[in-house]
Image (cartoon, rainbow, N blue to C red; front, side):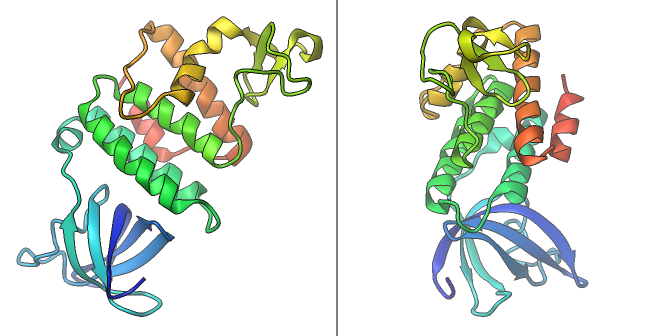
Length: 239
């Protein structure tokens, strides 16, 4: 993956020496590190590209820690940069990818979804609901997805209940006191999980219901992945 153009999403940057940055790039081969030399200088042609959240096509040098040689934008999403809520949602996405993706995951599939997500985030009227959609699909991608349509024990599709802590769905015959959410309560989550990102329309939810569902998803991430993005705490202050 050197001396050729590759698609990359800049997950994070760290200052490197006096004028450079260390970039963490999500590519179709996983998370890769690269040095962007001199990009903190005003005259650097790569300065505008060495930013967290940039969706790029890049050319890297050879080596274990390659240098960023060239870059160009794949797409521009101006509404994300101009809207604090959308900016914060994008930051949560980058943390979720950075801390939870392994070398063995299907990076081609996930990077393709990230590209679609960024376009949808740029255009959406409800960034937080779109974040919920991403979180649900990422959990499923990582092997912890909730099957909302049947009991996890017997496969029954009748009288389903949801465990708010683990996300396990069971029928009444196999449920216990922890399964307190009935099917009507988690229908919006099921809709988000199976929605196509390009055509997703925000679901009409009152504020208290949306907060409840956001808290559910957050608890599933903490349970399965011990994951709680710092950017999520910032996002909550914007409510």
